[in-house]
Length: 191
Image 1: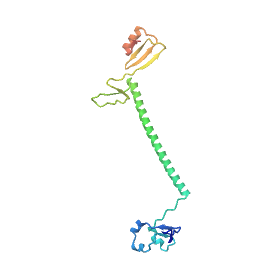
Image 2: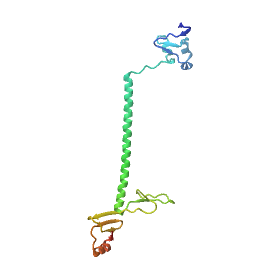
Image 3: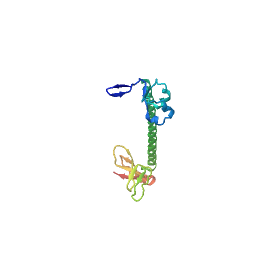
Image 4: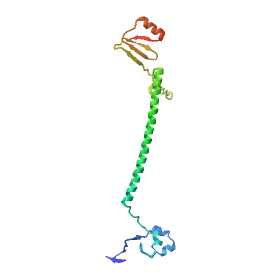
């Protein structure tokens, strides 16, 4: 040690390491014998290997190649995770799309068969009952009609249950209207 400006300073070797006092607490008596009151030990110390595990030895800084390799690994992992999440999101979206359009197709089949959309009725005293449709009614069923127009004008229409209308540009005579009503159930209505 040298004395400068009234203070004691340690001579530092380029490879000297300070003593870790937390590690020294658990050291054996044989290991403590090598510590002769010096606070930092150089690699040139003859018993350096015996007390090496008790010293604070800093890790060597990483080279640029090691840092680049770690960064590339992190990016590859992040890219793989992102691709997996996008694939899962796409699969969920396709599932919900298929489910929704299956329901719409079922509603079109219902319309084709019954002439109206299935509906939901809401009664405040009972839980809502879902009939497979999208429409909400507060008690009465929604009425939907299918209309066909023949010609440019509109003098009336044949009404076919449930709610199908054939609009005509020319009114049929009484005999045709009578037999259409009695034989086929087509009722004529003037506009």
